[in-house]
Image 1 (cartoon, rainbow, N blue to C red):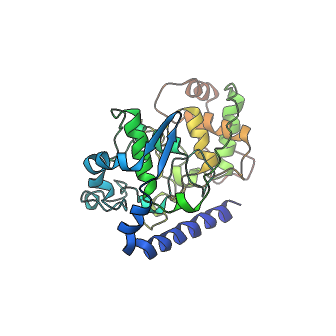
Image 2 (tube, helix red, strand yellow; image 1 turned 60 degrees about the horizontal axis):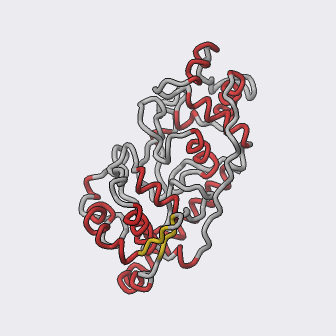
Length: 290
């Protein structure tokens, strides 16, 4: 199922790339037809035309006039150390509350603008007013025909977080081994797994797995709910798939708790792991015998 989901994501990204290339020559005309694009964040309505000025002042240097990620600063952001600016024309986003392959919600884009992304040149824009951010969301959406041609994804449901226990941490270790998270992230979460050096995004650019131990914040948020959401939605455009078809909700929570044991921040999960004398997974151990 994981391989099938990954193939579907890759084919979808390829189709989007071809589609974008086919209408790129008519970009200016095409974009004008979507100048009425709106966003809705709670009771705030954002308007693309009102986000244009802020985009040109603060965003165009990286994301480009046409929203294709080819701004004048882009050549200096070479992967894998730096991630290149998002190509908004593709309409493919890592951080979503919606299932893999579907469009993010307006709130997802608003949160990304507000939060920014650690380990990238994308800063927090929390200094903008809520209205400015809502207008920017609408402007970002107007770059891609996906918002005209496709239905929005339905946000996944996140069940209540259970109480963390030593048993759940040990169970999370089993999940980490079973779905082979270690192949990319390493057995200690240090982004040094055997596949790490081979990873590329859907456009063929080198990309690094997340290092859980270096103190940086996961790009899509650092709460337990945020990390759970990443497992179940995947990071579209990257090698990180959705595990919605591979792990159950309880197992996803167990995995959240186990990953907390890698992180540098103090936590009850780290204390429990220390008490358990929990060892890293053994990739050579038979299935179910970690």
